[in-house]
Length: 196
Image (cartoon, rainbow, N blue to C red; front, side, top):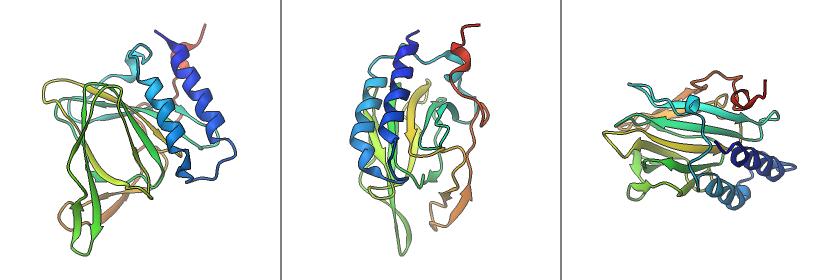
């Protein structure tokens, strides 16, 4: 297992977010490059952060910046699983590690929500971005009905503690939620790599 790949990414993200204002999505181009490098090889994610659930997708915290400038999360999608329509309220980069995801963006209008463009597919090694400035409301699903997919998400804040919203697909009505993490808020990736 190549633990250096993740450690180098965290170090790069720490340097990148240093002295940046929260919500500054001018960071996206550089963050996209770091995430593309991280998922270029699938040799670093421990099995503990790749376990699916039979009913629900899982969101494992890999690293949470101590100043909440960013969080790095593995999303594990069981066959056919999908999110509700939701937002993030911060910038984010989604990088595909295994399998594939389908993403449908939405925009708010006078009649509720409407699709914003066609559904797109994210394959291994590819990245996509979200932010309140470029488009922040979407639904994501595993592209496969018969296997697990895993994507690595980077957010400009601690996504497990941020108040955000899910949306009713017909009315567009928003309902606030805080997602938390499948492995607990305090967990991070360093524990599996301790040299005890």
